[in-house]
Amino acid sequence: MEIIMIFQGVHKAMESEQIVKNHGYQARLIPIPGAISAGCGLGLKADESLMEALVATFQSEELEPLKAYRIHEDTDTHKKNYELIKEWREA
Image (cartoon, rainbow, N blue to C red; front, side):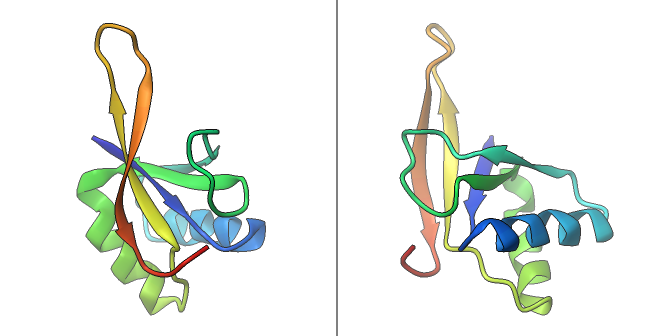
């Protein structure tokens, strides 16, 4: 499954992408879906299996995400739903 990590502001989201690239992780910035009302409009999309490693890397770089959502996609309709799975602090 994939996740979207939300940060406080565009600058922090862009910083997260640079940190990810510098550490060799696979993730990318995407527009935050309308179903999620949080953050700055950009989120970092990554495989859920990377979440703990990404959070540890961000913390070592003094960057803290706000929230993480798990992306669920209905196999019949292809509609995506978003489940809040972690909240570090309020947006």
